[in-house]
Image 1 (tube, helix red, strand yellow):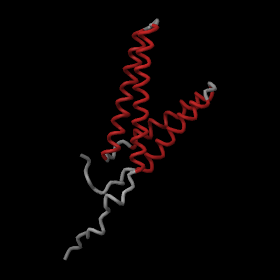
Image 2: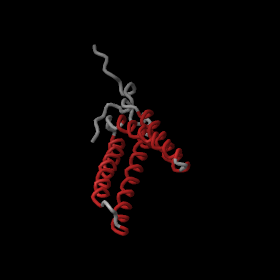
Image 3: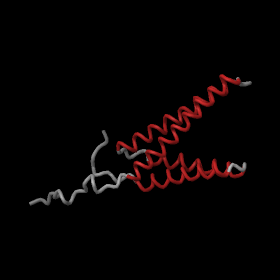
Length: 140
């Protein structure tokens, strides 16, 4: 006779705390939307006041837009339960900590605190979510 797992032995979807995943998703989405806003602002500035190097501005916007789309994708995949967003979320937010320090050194303390706080929340939620908090289901 084999010992098949009883329904009470299996982790239920209700026993998994999804809050860290949702926080990580929200942080990634917020950062992605902020970067898209930066892209729009840069293009508006380019069109209104011009630039001595418009090709540089356009390339900067394209690069930032790639990161924005990546962050929005991370947010989406956190929500659907994929395992892979953990590492890129931690790496991205860890890279924001030196940015925050640079802002402190340039005496932009409030912006630095905001960047550092969001980065630490992103790192903490990604670590707390882990990669093994799913109950054996596959993402849609």
